[in-house]
Image 1 (cartoon, one colour):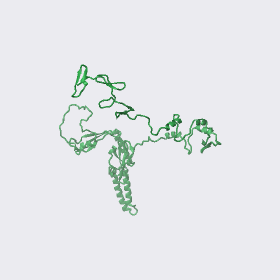
Image 2: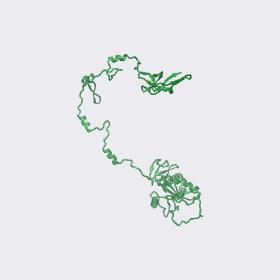
Image 3: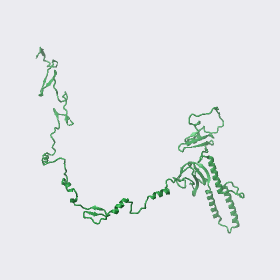
Image 4: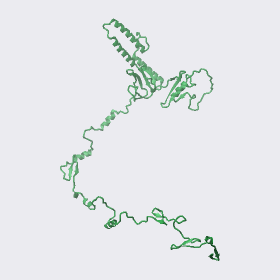
Length: 421
């Protein structure tokens, strides 16, 4: 809640304060969320009565100032710019409207016995005076007087209608700040300060768009049901065609005639120059609508048809032409091949019973090793095996280091001759 603190210490600043950035000196001075502003005013311990708070609505590009008016933190909206931007001008305009209303309603004459200072009490005085006069008349003219109850009811209805029809200025407000519809504001006129779209609370229904400066009045649309009625507004006629535009467009058009259409002048001249078809041969016929078409033509009358057919063969189901000259000899040879026969192609290669792998229609026989069967090669070195051109193999020479013998035998080298003892 806001507080009233009349006591406090002050700090004297002999110099002016110059802000170094676009921020308020008091962090609570400017708010961008209205709900947070209200919560501050009602619950913050540093809020004080008389404090000015500013709300910036970034979406609507508007700024409103509020003052905390009591300890409960209630806010008073301070006056801001009007619809025209000139408060003096708008006040003068309002005074002119009040004067016009005064002229329409009229002034109380000097001889009038009415003492009320407002129209509502004046109406009540008139009504009371009428009822008093009516009572006096009913007492004196009871035999010739009209039905008092029915007449009073009619007069009351007219007085209520007159009261409801009297417009009373309600001021300038934003559309979202319009008061709740009720009998208490019937006849009050409000100037809407921003563009708006009507809702179901309007006589014209929802979805109608109006610009800022439009006036609306609260009326009783039906028994006990109150709605807003738009008095002024801007009607957008940009989507409507002008008379000049329509006349220019129609100047280039022709009237529609059923069964007829526009035809170029050159085609009309051709149609006018065509001769009427009197008769046709058996080969031609005139269809409905005058269309001349071929019925049947003998082949002999078709130019080049005989020469074109001379180099052709008759079509027979299941047969066709090939690019080669297929003779009877080739047919006999083809008939001599048994069904499912294959060309003489080696299907596999084995090395000592083991199949060699075929890759890409080729077989690679590896070089033999201790564990792989394959090709052997001859050498001419010592302790090596030589392969002759006929494929026979023989030992070149053997070093004594390669000689072996049984354990119970011994090898005796005798000047190049050796014996096995």
